Amino acid sequence: MINLDFTLLIQLVNFLVTLLVLNALLIRPIREIIKQRADKMSGLVGDTEGFLENANQKLSNYEAALSEARRGATAAREAKKEEGLAKEQELVTAASNEAQAILQASREQVAKDVKAAMDTLKGQVGALAEKATAKVLG
Image 1 (cartoon, rainbow, N blue to C red):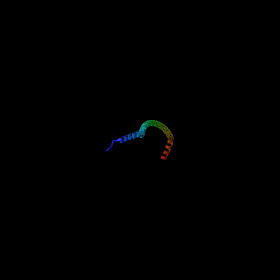
Image 2 (image 1 turned 60 degrees about the vertical axis):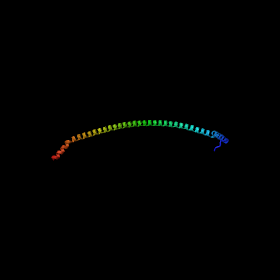
Image 3 (image 1 turned 30 degrees about the vertical axis):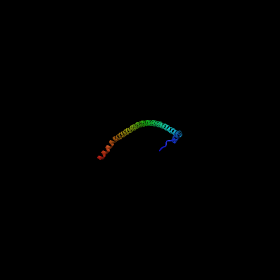
Image 4 (image 1 turned 120 degrees about the vertical axis):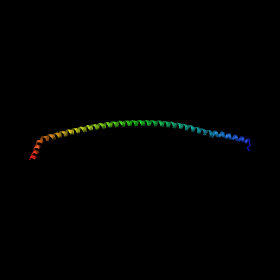
């Protein structure tokens, strides 16, 4: 059985003194360190969230600028393509006109040559007809 005498009181005082000394030397500093660490972690979490928000904003700005640059490049490419097609059409038209002119000149030259040959043959028809008749008649 437990004896409740003066030693219990001394033990109780000893326990309380030990508790107070441990509280002053160990528990309170550890609680302060834990509190400082928690404050530092929450500060770091806040900084991290700020950095993330800043990074997301910069990424959004970058993507918007990239999209705008792509639209500009596409518009410039389309403009150059249209310009090239117009130049191509211009060159094809010029080449076609030149070919038509050469063809017309060639046709006129051929017509002149045919007319000259016909005139020459008309002048020789009488002589050729006489030779042919002389051969046939004999």
